[in-house]
Image (cartoon, rainbow, N blue to C red; front, side):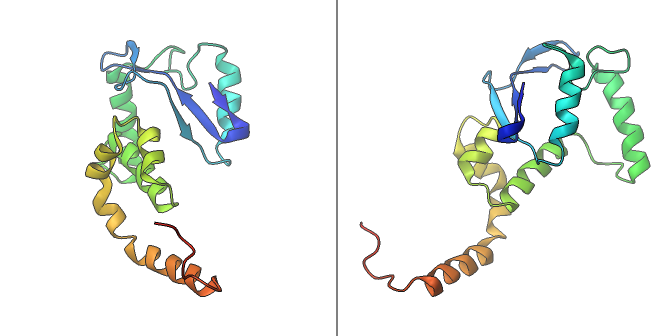
Length: 155
């Protein structure tokens, strides 16, 4: 389920709109990076749930249904002042944070379970465009620190 040493969790199944267990959209297992600060709580929740249990069970201890989740999410949105923020935007936020932290396109593709890096680029390319200045700064720092940049790369 999780690998705290490697700071990641495995996503193998999800729930469909009616709350039934289903394959992921891509039908493939994927590993998702998790910041170290969140891992202890996830490890505890996984230990409580046992093998095959839900890390985040619904109010009755079983899986969430769409109706249960929508009600809870609506209350959370109202409480935080984000009434138009849907849960799919959490996925986009994770992608944005991964890109902002320097993750390459292949890693973001794997994290999101996209079929191809092209799909990830088509979805998030405009976000990467904003980082062009960062790339220029890092390239400049590399050049400034390199004693001889001529002929160091083969073609």
